[in-house]
Length: 296
Image (cartoon, rainbow, N blue to C red; front, side):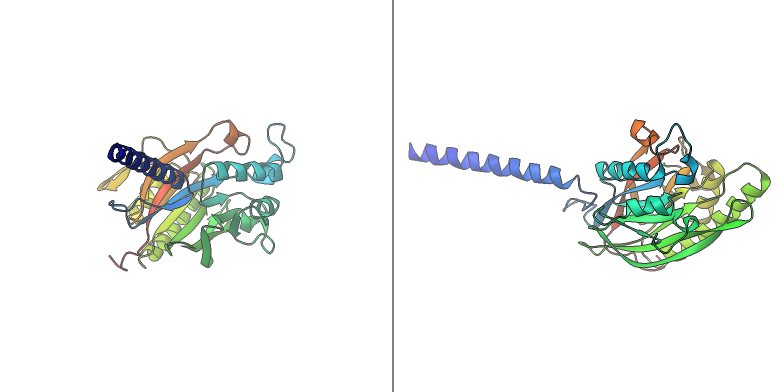
């Protein structure tokens, strides 16, 4: 009888251990930036939930009957990002008052540029990251033509993951809107400059994410993928002929070849419609924790 009893106890203990392990694994999978399971082909990658988010600047909704103020919508954007376990964001149109909410002490987020010393035209392109996950190692800007004769400074930020040490460059892009010849020309020039910057960063072996409001569909995709080996989270290819993805928006997510995309969501539900008039693409970037050798 004792041997049967001991066997039963051992079986219960084993079952409890298995269930506990499964529960822990499921919980870990919800983290904004987490390592892929050990013992798989994704063993040396970091899963980073990444978004491109045109948050709709405060000035656009000053007298709106449809939208709340920019500050209120910034708070809603934070809640949406937290609910989706997003870890890194390329943001467009955020003005200083909105950035003050998005990166407020206690928000859990940091960003570049620093809204306390930047102008609205500078914060209108920003990179945000979850401060518990990432630290900023380096940052600079890339100037592109914008809005028919003006310019914009695109943030280029090098982040390091606190736990794994993985590094990734993030470029937040906003190109000129409009269908006239001058606007199209500015987008072509801007795309060329972004591609050159992204190519130079990628040549160092560090993964690169390029995301933003490109204000174009097929023409942008074909130009950018013709100038770089980067892949879109939306799909498509450019081996020989350009084959754009079936479902395109003007907001895009791209990454250098060492990064793999998965779990794309084109968010445009009720909660997003309260914040912005854009679709928000969000996907998981599988970033290598060991840099690719430069030039490979």
